[in-house]
Length: 116
Length: 110
Image (cartoon, rainbow over all chains, first blue to last red; front, side, top):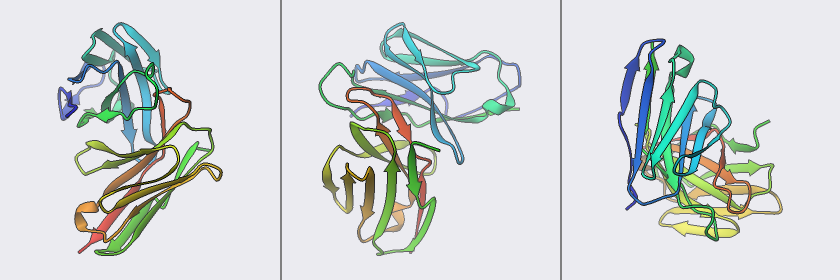
């Protein structure tokens, strides 16, 4: 079974703090994604990565950065946390688009971040 | 206007009822995904389909490419089916980016 794990289920941080959210997958997937989920807005893509050290902006990258130094690990960084970044953060991974077909995404359990 | 629209937003039903959740999309797609999210956050993929119909246990997913519409059906619903159901579209063949609907919160009352 594919397993995607996230470093914390719940996190409380203060405004202005630097926050790291870690995601690890164990199935050698090339693609990894960071989403945030807010009531009434659904899941929105922050960043994704299709290879080590490669990244692309999603729909809402402002205020975030990412790092992918190893294939299995994708980190989301909030450089200076703000209250409007209070949200549920979900990581996902999938096989590379280079293969024929469309592949499902496997999600981690989510991190509920509260910024006070 | 969201490219992927779901209805209804909330649905409450009695145990045993037949459930239908609808999803309409306005973009060309390579596949339509149905996802389930239980309280606590974790999301699992139920179906991924590009044509016709798929069935898994009591769950059935259908898609009509011409009408840009998909439905998720649950037969003999059970309280453990209570969850948020999300549809998502893969917009281009081989492109892994998904566009999500806002979800349907389903509550099944015993």
